[in-house]
Structures are given as C-alpha cells and as structure tokens.
Length: 246
Ligand code: NAI
Image (cartoon, rainbow, N blue to C red; front, top):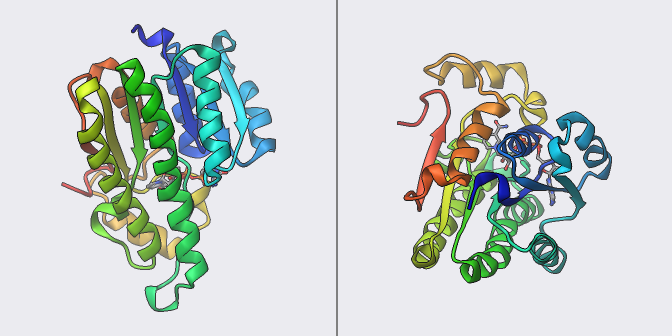
C-alpha cells in the first residue's frame, strides 16, 4: 500500500504533538482523521495545517467513551474502505506526589492515557487483522520508562501503554499488524508550558542535547513507525528525548 493511499486516525490531534503528527502524515499523502475533545481547536485545524488535498477530517470524541470511540474507528474504516494507522496520542497529566494523589486523579489519568489506548487498539486491531496490515503507534513517555517524581499516575499509565503495546504486538504480528511506542522526553507544548520555571530548569539539566524537544521531533518518529519504512519493526519503544534514556 502506497503511503499516500493510507488512512490514519490520530487521537489528541487538535494541538501539540498530535497536531504535528497530523501535519506529518498529511505531508506523506495520508488521509487523516484528527480526534479530540476540543471542538473549537479542531475547527481551526484545517486552516492551520493547510489541509493538503482536503485529506484532513476532524471528529469530536472523548476517547475514554468506549462505544463512541470504537464506533468512530469503525466509521472511518467504512468510509475510506480501510484503516492503516492509529496513533494513540491523547493524554493528560494530573501531577501530585504519590502520598497526596487522589483516587480521582489516579483513575482519570489511567482512563484517558491507558484505557483509551486499549479501546482504540481493540477496535482498530480487528479491522487491521481482517485487512492483514496496519500500524498502531502509542505515545508513551520517558516517565513511563524511568518514573518521575510527582507523576506516579502518569508514569504508571505510560508504562502500562508499553505493556499493552508489547502484548498486542505479539498477538497481531502474524498478520503484519505492527505496534510500537514513542517515548518523548520534554517537549515544548501547552502541556509542559504550564510547568513552573524551576521544573523546566531541572528538566533541562537532564537532557544531554541541552534543548527541549519540538512536537515535530516526535511527529517524524511517529511517521516512520506509521510508514512501511518500519515494515519489519514491531513491539519496539523508540525514545525521542535528546539522549535522556539510553
Ligand atoms: P496537549 O495537552 O498539548 O495535547 C493533548 C491533546 O489530547 C489535547 O488536544 C486534548 O484535548 C486531547 N485530549 C485529552 N483528553 C482527551 C480525551 N479524553 N479524548 C480526546 N482527546 C483528548 O499534550 P501534548 O504535549 O501534545 O502531548 C501529547 C501526548 O504526548 C500525550 O499523550 C502526552 O502524555 C505525551 N507526552 C508529552 C510530552 C511533553 O513533554 N509534552 C512528553 C512525553 C509524552
């Protein structure tokens, strides 16, 4: 399947890293559906991305809503006759030290970051297994590999995504459906802009390349894993973090 005939879904596609992933996949000629909670941001997306070939679609959907998110994936596949790429990118933080974490903040982060990826995997996986091809990419994190003070819930969700990814990779490989994860380090987006300067300074000290990442740094790694350039790669975790995790 030529890259420009592929059909992709990107969750959390309205801003930040997800938006850049949409841009990158569109540049490869893919038909892309950006899924997000935020209708007002999705409305602006075609203008912001230029919508080459009018191949960008948007869909308002809460990815924790199992029925709606699953149906959305089925609808996209039905409309375009196939589904080649799912990027499980939507994610949130609710940071606090573990001794003060509330049940609600634990549950919410696990639901948005991890359960949504499971829901997406199950729905897309069925379509891709029938099709005998596909690539599912999981947006994990450096925190999921190493843990991070103040992020026990987030780190657990991101480590959980790696377990989900590796298990699914083993189950789906026989029909050439691939699953891989990207672990960003510190990337400049709205999610990290809100951190106090002291936290940013401490993060910078840990980055061998001495710069924060850009959303496009992550999007290029996702594009590689989404494409046939990585046709023989599955079950892998790719760190994109300026050298933090080695
Ligand atoms: P962001 O906050 O700028 O964008 C996340 C998007 O996900 C938002 O548009 C938001 O509306 C959407 N979203 C949140 N909950 C949703 C839901 N229930 N249903 C549908 N959409 C939902 O975040 P950013 O920085 O672009 O992060 C994207 C992914 O990369 C996240 O999974 C994050 O955990 C991960 N990541 C980010 C890092 C960073 O330094 N920015 C580092 C490591 C991982």
